[in-house]
Amino acid sequence: MILNYNYRIYPDSNQVELLNEWLETCRVSYNYALRELKDWIASRKCPIDRCSLESEYIIAADYPFPSYHQQQNNLPLAKKKFPRLKTVPSQVLQTNIRRLHDSWDSFRARGYGFPRFKKYGQMKSILFPQFKTNPLTDWTIQLPKVGKIQINLHRPIPEGFVVKQVRVVKKAVGWFAVVAIHSDLDLPSSVPHGHSIGVDVGLLSYVAISDSYTEPRPKFFKTAHRRLKVLQKRLSKKMKRGKNYEKARIKVAKQHNHIAFKRSDYQFKLAHKLCDMADTIYVEDCDFRIMAKGILGKHTIDASFGQFRTILEYVAKKRDVFVGRVDHRGTSQTCSNCRSQVRKELSDRYHVCYECGYGVDVQVDRDLVSAQEICNRGIETYRGTPEKQEIASQVVLSGNLVLDKWRNSTSVVRGGRSISDNGSPRYNPSEAKA
Image 1 (tube, rainbow, N blue to C red):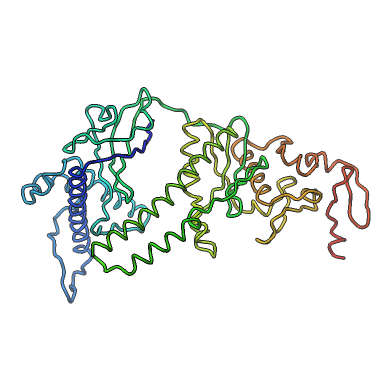
Image 2 (tube, rainbow, N blue to C red):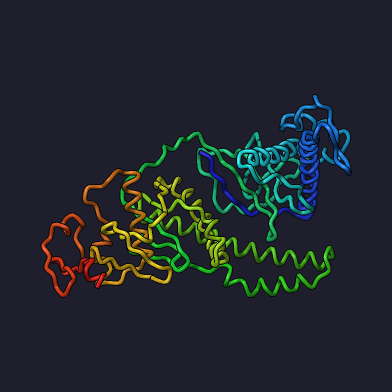
């Protein structure tokens, strides 16, 4: 079991200068290794019968591909040629090369996203991959060649866990240490159990839960947009590459950090709240990047539904709560009570089904019905087809019995509309044609 704990650290001025120098050295070594990779690829793309009109980098035909192990083994030779590399711990340089080849492997697997050169200041983190002893003592953390750094250890390391690696991250608001802790404890995969809920995400209600609960959407970006707009306007008037420009840029970055911290804090608290409400949670399995390309893209990105789903799965795994993904297609166009299709436009915010009468007498939010349908699909997918199961909140809201009992009930015709014994109107095709 591996967990990541994020702590704020407070290096002094000398340590900050040293860490900034290491980040820049890692950036230069990253770009150098990427240059070797791109030159080797370019030398293999040249046609045999002709070369480029400008220039062509020629490498011997038997020269091997600059793999991770080859570039890692070349680091001792590079330190003799570039003494600057000696100031950085060797394992930090190795993990830096590992980062490049992880990006290369990801590019080959996906087919897009070729690694890019990093500009000045774009290298934001370094990784210390190994520790012989626990680096956390009292309120300090011991890092190789850096020494002890003050750390806000607001959450102690649990018993039975050991520190495996530490990543030092530089942000506009300060420095952070992401501590990866490891335990031999093997948690079994969670299975569907206990009370189940369906969760539907949206822009009006951030989450709608099948138990008739909605959470209003906090507008993280919109509330801080006025201040951000002022800071960006000041930045645009500064001369680039000047000291005042850098100060203004840091203020803009701090405002973005403030928005991101508020969003992640809210999502973690909401994830724990959902885990308190149920033992099994079903969510939509959809690509939220497609939603971000629409007319409401700005608000969709601000809501960050994909990040919330990832956080929910992470929190649920620690708390032994099962999270399952179900097909999202047609959840808002399906009646969760009788499972018939009820077409709605985006402006239709309430669900009305004349087939079973759900939502006729009492207004039901379409997001709640969508969450109930997600719960139904999750139960069918992960627990098998239920035998006459229905969500309790649906019975309370609609006043209907389960579908099988409703179909067996006697009905009378009043004014062209069929009325069941419980008073629910039933859709009549002849009435629709009239």
